[in-house]
Image (tube, rainbow, N blue to C red):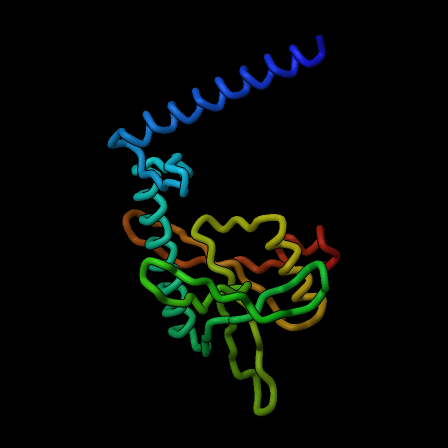
Length: 191
């Protein structure tokens, strides 16, 4: 009896798997999806073409806004550079950011650190104000990014961390800087 029920379950699971594969093949044949295939000829990844182009445009807008922030900080008298380190919260230290390889353009992406920029400004003859700047179009940080900011401030790696966000007035776009300590300081004991 038990052997017969296992056999029936196996047949049902094979039928379900076949149905899933046929559904994927049907989607792969449509103009709406872009498909990657595995070595057995089964569709592996199905992506909607509309989502692909939306993501491409979003990344381009984000990169353009990063450039605008960098130029704006330069106009305000800051010396700005790309920050190429990241925070490993498990170990509790600043580490070199991993480089990402883009297989399509065959290049390594270097600027993947957190925060995006480090900015310096001379205070007096011997002191500089050192600020980390994270660029977010909407101004919202994830939970992990907030923890990284709090770590960097507690270890006194940066004097301040600013969140650069987009502010629109009519058709014009301006950069607005929000101090992390003012916005989230009480939550992380930076107060």
